[in-house]
Length: 154
Image (cartoon, rainbow, N blue to C red):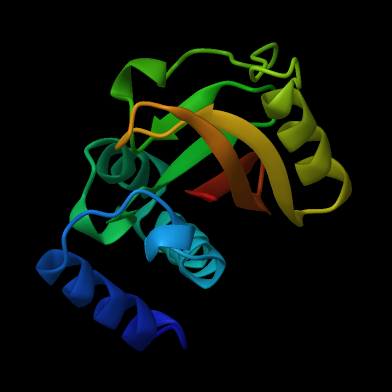
């Protein structure tokens, strides 16, 4: 069992009893939550296999959702293989996708995965709960030829 499992389990139990919250500043998912969720996702992909894990992440399995935190998995060419907020993104290559400021954040994410392996990234994105474009920080870990990411809104 992962050293993060008790904390993640407690976080998920609390999430079920608390109202949904829009950002870390308001008490939503935090940086430690994002790190724990990504590590949990990486461990699950390793143990369950790509197809099963990607399917569960995309199906919004409760263990991969916390407030506004969800997982996204990209191939290193920018193609989405799992998306916890928008299943329509699976199979799409988003390497050229830019945020409102023109930042090619998927390309940057893939490049960081190749060069650093584990990292935090800042950009702006639409919060699925508020439907507003907000600052976001994404924690990512390279896994084989993919990068597994989970982010929080600030």
